[in-house]
Image (tube, rainbow, N blue to C red; front, side, top):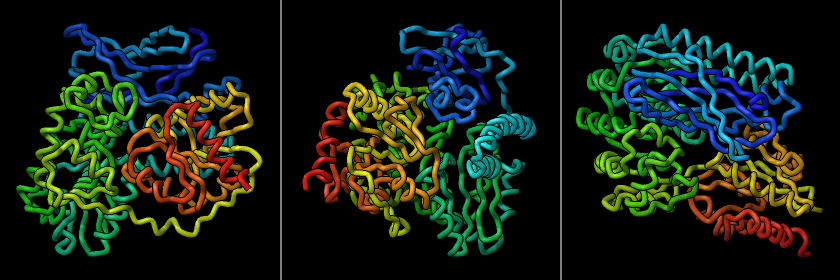
Length: 540
């Protein structure tokens, strides 16, 4: 027990939803599972919410510099409970690689219960800011001022500025011109490619002189939030519920309804019904954008309970998988009934005027889950990537294999696979290294794997040059709907290897320097990469 180090930075409960973050590591053993066990006084039956762990925590790594596992000690927990009103106890259950399980009691002082009162949320926001400030001190000491500034900007920019009190308050924000044919967008606010796509959409609507209302979910305060944008406005407000927003929107002129993605919304089955009702009230055109597979399954990367790409099997297989699935946002769907999920989301897809996918692969998977989709509803529109041109990376190190991996590599992006690959390289004792241009959310053998930390887009070519990488590996284990990273690497004319599914494999089939891997076994992949490297650099 004395060799286990941990803390809870924030843990909040609202409307039967739990969200929190902190860090944990063991000095001698790897953590293989982390979950919160919540027990109710009503029936005494425990419920479990798994935490996503292994996230980079530079502050902890610096504070515990003699412990290699400290750097990847961060965790996040986010899930729904059947009833949090009769809370008895919360335990943090940590399973170690040696087979032992450690139970840690969570003090009630660490738990914040939210109401819809904005002042209550504001007090907690200040406490979270204090935690982030302490983490920022480590970034200052390390000289990483830009990282600190980015973190602060994201935190301040992301939270709601205040709460709307009446639906009419939202209506009154728009002038006569901007209020005509408003665009309504439903989207998460977690960052990444879907948010970048949304930002470009918003800018195009504003350029046309139209106003935009974005409905999103602010996870740290567990609140619905609307972002109001036009040529004059860029504001964020918390709202109490969807009925409040619907009352406001029916008083406005809504011309377009765009579903970007609903991941992270805590009551996911209410979203399709809300959007169907909004279309009925406004007669607006509905466009669905398939950035992920949340429409198909709450495990929105299509990872089954074993953490493997499921390929959308028969619903009987799904019925067995979903109650045990801890991936994606499955824990927010308390019913865990895939037939109900498909029925609800299928009714929304039925009223969509257009379903936009960014690859043939995604379109085929959607139609596999929903055979009733009309082919005339689907438009395949690959992302525009003009901004990626002109970025060149120079390969200078060719004397031995150096595997480059780009991005924030979490579980669905292949973190566990990279860990297995590094172990296989160490087992063989060969001169092969892996460099992650970005961060990886798992502890790897430091003699094999290095990482640069977060980077800006313009820095990527220079970082690849400096890393010595000569074969790029895209290790994502889910069928990506596009993948900007893959396109960036292809545009830089780099050798790229990846697994045989999703949009990236679809494009890689016609790329002269591409390798579609035959296997997902680490030993076999290493053999394939060595042969790929030899053909490129040693064949002549």
